[in-house]
Image (cartoon, rainbow, N blue to C red; front, top):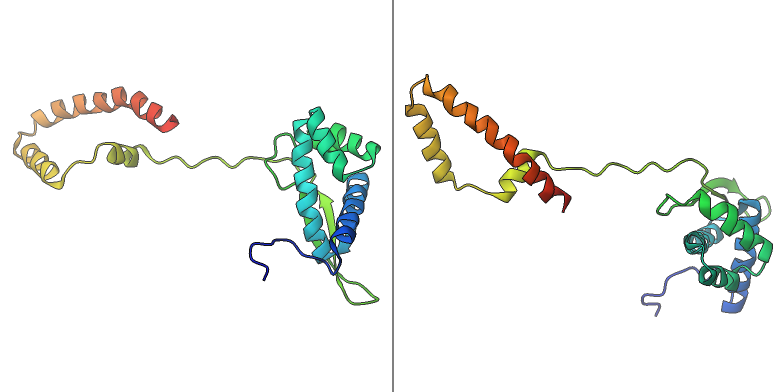
Length: 184
């Protein structure tokens, strides 16, 4: 059974598969794009993205970790000096797989795997509106709210504007406290 065993075996034994992926990732970092089968491209993506993330740290230990997989020093230098700094602000997703078609000889599905070139723009985080935050912070029971509405209706029309003015000032004073809570 293959419980919790990830990755495609690609019809090869372990040593052959590791050697093939090492050669593919070395060629991939040299050329920055290669054409291969869909299954191989998906396995190559896993390895390449982990290596780029390791190279982004840029220290000696990470260089030695990458050298265990990519045995070519020139390719590792290119990875650390040109490729990794390009993705310094990107939290992942360094590669793109594009389906190309079928191979002529055996009709295998081919894909182009390449490094992503466009700039990364982080999506802004959604903030809850102030009303929802106030309700979440201090929920009022329905009975108290209905009692306040009843007292507001009993008050004369002249006193209502006077009561609204202090109510407008109070949220302005509470606003910085709510922002502090949102930041935490």
